[in-house]
Length: 378
Ligand SMILES: *Cc1c(COP(=O)(O)O)cnc(C)c1O
Image 1: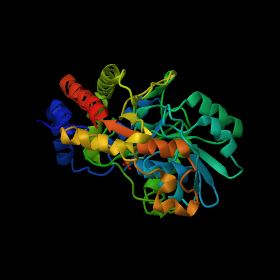
Image 2: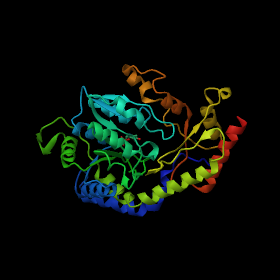
Image 3: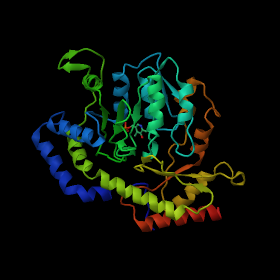
């Protein structure tokens, strides 16, 4: 029995190995390892791909969020509204600049934050709204921007999981004031290490972010702000530049995998499949179902289903087991269990099935079969 991993980066690498090796060796021979032409060339390619005038490459998606918040001059006393159902980095960077994350509950259909609750959460202290296009599924950016613009609050899109996703005819990361991307290896456009980028149409925001990522300096050894060291490595830029050319094809591959799951699992009772938003295109960073928990199955039902799959060599993942408001680090916010019912329910029910462009039909059939078996026999 071969194992079906949640994702397999080696299959994809083999298809581009020759190009990547050549490009990496060229960087190594060039002696330019930090900044330099390849980093700028990639940043330009990526900005063009997203549809933004400016792109600031940096060391990670986390740093992109940090630079975005700092570039908007957000700090102590300020509030930023975001989702409690996301990777920690989203809220963590709001806290890192000294501001306070304000969570609003998610809607169970999209697992993104509920835009209906947005206006009520805006206060005079609100300095940004930070939607997360979770699992590659875009937030309804038309409705979001209407609320944000009405209140004059800038929007920072967390696009770490949504590189290539669209709302209407625009890509996520080009619709709000700033888009933040991660090139962590498991993301839709992943490098061979850490990497990230910030996109914007505002040249001043971009210039400030560039200054902050270079120790707060515009001219070397002259410092005007407390910044950080957050550059994209030339080796990563070279790899990402090649991979960017394949991204749309890989995202199409993910889409086909999602459609096959939809067909294989559509009629299975007891699970809720991820929905596709009417106005946008998901890039399926994850294919995340919800295992409904009938009372008679007990509280650990989803975890038992997951273990059953694991015993068959099918590895699924739980993104995310603990919502951010219930994390130890955010106990001080005073939002205990029951604060965000949909988020807490999702954390108990979600299961991300194996998802990557090269996933075979046979493997998907095994996943579907295993899942049906678990629900019928456990
Ligand atoms: C991965 C991720 C980040 C952080 O990106 P890194 O490159 O790992 O720092 C931020 N937000 C979300 C939603 C993510 O999934």
